[in-house]
Every structure is written in C-alpha cells, then in structure tokens.
Length: 104
Image (cartoon, rainbow, N blue to C red; front, side, top):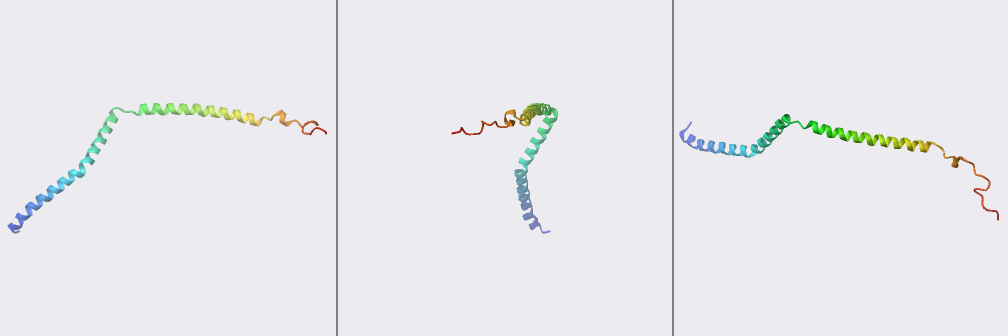
C-alpha cells in the first residue's frame, strides 16, 4: 500500500470511529439507563416483595364482592317469592255490584 494513502486513511478511520462511538453513546445511553433502572427495580422487588399487600387488598375486595353478591341473591329470592305467591284479592271473581254501573 502507498504511504500517501495510509496518511489519508488514518485520519479518516479516526473520524469514522469517533463518529460511530459518539452516535452509539447518544443512542444507547438512554436504553442502557432504562435497562439499569429495570434491573434495579427487579432487585428491589426481590428484596422487599409487595405481593402480600396486593394479595390482602384483593382478598378484601373479594370478600366485599361476596357479601354484596349474597345480599343480592337474598333480595332476588325474596322478589321471586313475592312474584310467585298469588294475590288473593286478584283471584276473587267480581261480585255482581262490582264492575257494573249504577242503574239509572
């Protein structure tokens, strides 16, 4: 290879490496920072699990919903009993004076 070509090639390679390194740092730094934050959060979660708090919160909601559902079922049963028992006043046949106009 010609020594004059090497003199031109060396600064060009340095510039290319510098540009690629700077671009890589600019592009990859936010990604690596987010990855570091994620790994740190995962490590903290392993040290201090919060599943117990969430589980007790979910259990409390399920107990409340179960109580409300039981109350709703009780109300529905009561309503069904009211609807199924016939009203004695409705079942009586009309007498002769009811439903007729006054004679005139």
